[in-house]
Length: 113
Length: 112
Image (cartoon, rainbow over all chains, first blue to last red; front, side):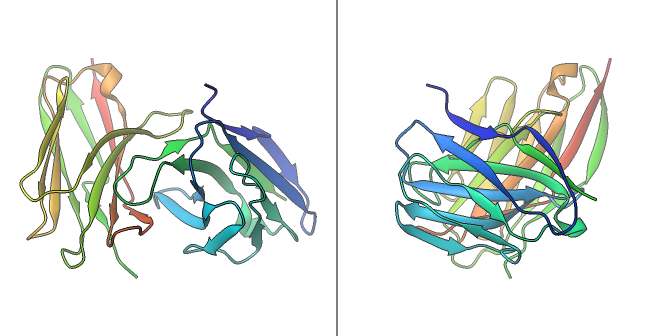
């Protein structure tokens, strides 16, 4: 099993550009999450999904969109990149919420200039 | 907003010494407490998931305790080794089926 995979590993965007961060998992997990990591702030939840076709906002959803058309894939879309979105983005998945461990992807380091 | 707090933010430990640090969370509506280990340039990996008051978990030299009534968990590292250097994250779920709220992490540096 590859676990949770993310692409790209690194990306530099100009202000106003758009991009999609890809995330896929092969563990047949229903639950998937997108986090951003800001220095000294731990992980903040952007969006999450409890199954194909179902998504919901986390703590910091502004400026992002997600979709979940299959169990395996959970892409994160940035429509108009802003410097405040410079961060490391982690995708994670779990068998269920709350009492099941989350499995994290390797992360995408995004810089917006 | 439900706050999960970790202290200290960072600590330096001499190789061979034992250490511990704290995760504090609101005790109302507690459901589960997670600990993750996060090495530099890698992704977080789960250490423990605890749900019951008084629960204790152990993996090698690392162990954790949970007090849901007063809202805290301790992570212990016995006989620290340089490979224990990492950021340790805790996260809490506050209701069944709820998402995790993460603390800011405790960064541990073990000096040889």
